[in-house]
Image 1 (cartoon, rainbow, N blue to C red):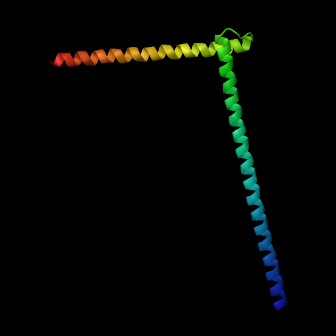
Image 2: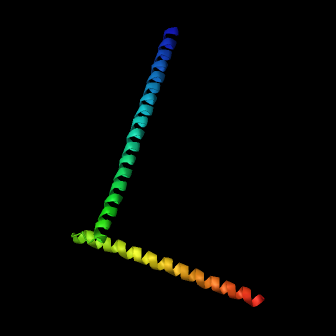
Image 3: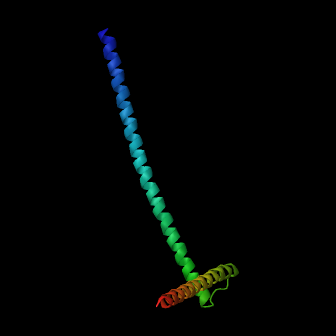
Length: 112
């Protein structure tokens, strides 16, 4: 009976030890994978920054009339059109504000 108990405890100890080792290995795996994913994320961010810089440079060349590529020209024209649209909307905002300022001032004058 005592021998079976020792055998059971020995197996239980090995099982617990194996489980702890597996858990430790899994934790180490997760740590390493997390580090690599972080590096991937950083590299993707660097790519995004470089692409933006390329775009800014191409748009600068487009404005200087130094772009010959039709695809880049078309994309730059879209950017230019969007800038113009933004400027028009900002002008409309200013005009709207001015109209409401004038209305507010006239309301204030009527009360006097």
